[in-house]
Length: 250
Image (cartoon, rainbow, N blue to C red):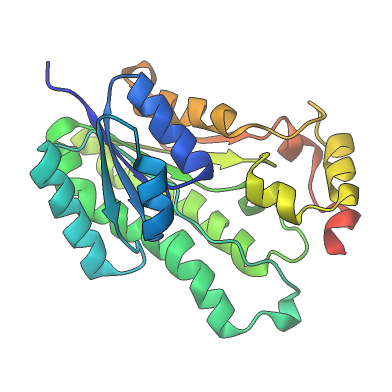
């Protein structure tokens, strides 16, 4: 059987890297996409079956070149995980249009560009797309006017893609992570925020990167062959109890 392949954007760290490693465990080849050359090279070192590709997903020309490179190397694309994203939190009145566009270009435009560019290849394999949103795209919270809006857009874009691509056998779903114990999160979250999350999340803890990768890989697999147009919140139950913690405003 031909070895299945996956594209993972934002693969140099965090959820993207965890997803890459889980795909490799499942026997897939993985095109690791990132715009941070140094971090990408470091993440890909020692991993067998990966193709690191430097690409800014907000640039249409770079996206087209990236997909062509993946097809030249692997010959097919069975799954696409649109994970690349930027977080820029701040008050509405301090969010300039430039900051707004920086978030939208990667978080929303990038999902559109990569998904669209991969459609011909995914038609051939009846593949799957999983887009990474956030619980911030499900309910409004402070300091997230650009980030939350971009992730809400990802959720609806995924449904649009599922509605249009289903006739080709292409499935499209969304995973919305809650608070995840990444190096970045632990560096910027104060103890007050950590304590508030603990109290607000029914499971009383942050998730791990691996715990987000697991549902992503599941939705790309044949085990989810009749699942499309769906949103899965991997958040420890956080969305069910609401967001908008006072500690996050400080």
